[in-house]
Length: 199
Ligand code: AR6
Image 1 (tube, rainbow, N blue to C red):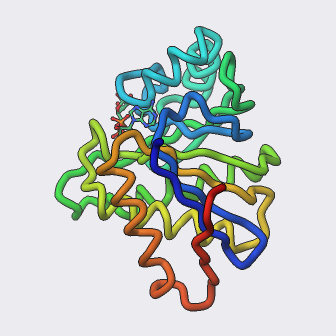
Image 2: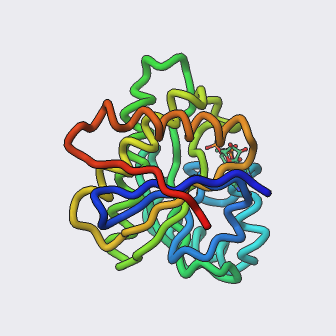
């Protein structure tokens, strides 16, 4: 059975880690690790466009023509097309260049803007892939720590989103996120993070 884990945050929200394919998610929104062109690519971007069908590309092209390329750290949303999720929130992660080119800040900004966009769309649940840790080369342990911390901070505050899922493609990525989740307690003594069994 694929690995999964659930953590409650102060008894009003939760986040989950799951090993799997994000295109199968039934959350209100899923996040796409896109590139600035918004016109598709490989990895999770390619998988989402294939599963959603051509309407997703048409919507992405419309936004690109209207606003130009999407800068790293920003997010925009489209309807989910043929996906089960109602919306796709597209964000562009940083390309890893050694860590001194604002990569951590840009990655944090991706998660913040995705949560804000999900709130604007009144979503109660959202699924994230591991942004930037594939083709963009961000070291997964460092990326996982930023991802989990940033999303938990948003879930802790009043927000329409009460469930965030990290949908991780492979066991190594899953382990990095599980480790980041385990270390949360020491980073946030004011937030109660409780591991829960999944039936
Ligand atoms: N479900 C969940 N996770 C996935 C899936 C999937 N179906 N497919 C891949 N992953 P990447 P990036 C994982 O490269 O690093 C694209 O070409 C993958 O194993 O998709 O942000 C875009 O167009 C890895 O753990 O995204 C951009 O040009 C994680 O998702 C560029 O790649 C992210 O890998 C973005 O690079």
